[in-house]
Image (cartoon, rainbow, N blue to C red; front, side, top):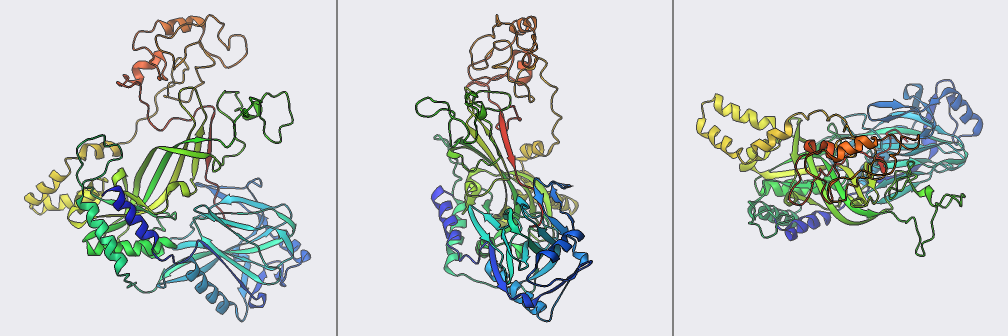
Length: 601
């Protein structure tokens, strides 16, 4: 499938009717809700300061989740929390009001009409002056959870805005002083609560659960026909390679991987619980797949991109004057406020882990790997390990327009650097022709495909089993190698050089005078090695450096970054110099940022 055809498919799905947004807001009368809290009684609305102080007396410090841990850190989340078992919701019109709100939320978020939303109370939160919650994503606490509903109780306060972001857009929700404010958003959206400036912000957070009530039966006519034509072209035309360089055309691809916009977990990845535009686009793809006799499954993908990038500032201005951070008042620091804690040149320290302001110049490399997918028959899913080729990927929203869950930037280091690595978690629709179903699943290491082969053997259908087994030959060795457990990391380099084997001190500026970018055999520095006089990190002695210089074996080439002592372990250089894996270990001077903790706003 040529680039033009893949672009056409992405544009067709992008032009599909957008059935909602990632966040919405509704206001209702405060008289519809009656709320009681153990130890306080019924809350009069709007809330006043004396009642709010009683709530704080009954509350506890709120925690948040980070991975498998539950943490409490007021520098990340500073708020008071009352658990739902101590809260009673009622009122003569509350059920009818909530049903109307949920119906409006379903429509505004773009969920299909075949889905009914249900709200489950999670916590009552109280924010006082100066309290906040840093940007985070809510963890999906139930298999059917698709989002969060924040009910702000009316009170007199300033600040405490709820900011919800997704795909480069942000929406700000400010609570009303007289009415109930319902703010809903998808669970994978990044959101934060700004510090409260005065008064108290009190909210009731609820989990939004989606339940399907009847099957869908939609038809979009011309759009489906155009998509079906794109799929037919994709599976019949030779695969396009990113760097062909005049080589022969490859065979048609076995699959198409269309990346979705929202994030999902294994438990929440289901055709009936897709969010916003994902639901509309996947509905069209499934109809087109049915017309072209293709199978479609949902999958989770790990995406990594490496960009040539630059910070929005430089250490020196146009006239060569040393620049400083805006709040640096030390005129004698000579720009050291822009360096990392070890003073490494070219590796500027960042005060935060947000690299969104960095200028992306050119995409150097990208990797997409499918790690899990649903079974074609809809009976659960399975772990897989399937790298996705360039010619198999299609997306309406590019990765750079989404928020990565982790970023690492490496400044200029002489012969490499100024690169920004970004990692994303995305869901995808994977399609393949039904006659290639066995090959497409087996290439991913699918246990189901192997069980199918075993079934033919057990049934005595040797011809069919032989045909299926022959289809595995082109990729079987690669698939088995990818599924083998990784070996443990090698021992540290004995000479403490930064050879890429482990995270080690930099040899280029601290040790014996050998430079990784210099050609020829490493020479011994005539200067006293740092570390012998108590200054700087310990390094090899001069005698040790001499031994390294006399070490037999391949010499360091220009562009190489390996030490002579462990050159045999690093492997022989290629014709174009030593080639290293794209994923480098963490080294000093390399900054990292990861996704924020999970919690409820």
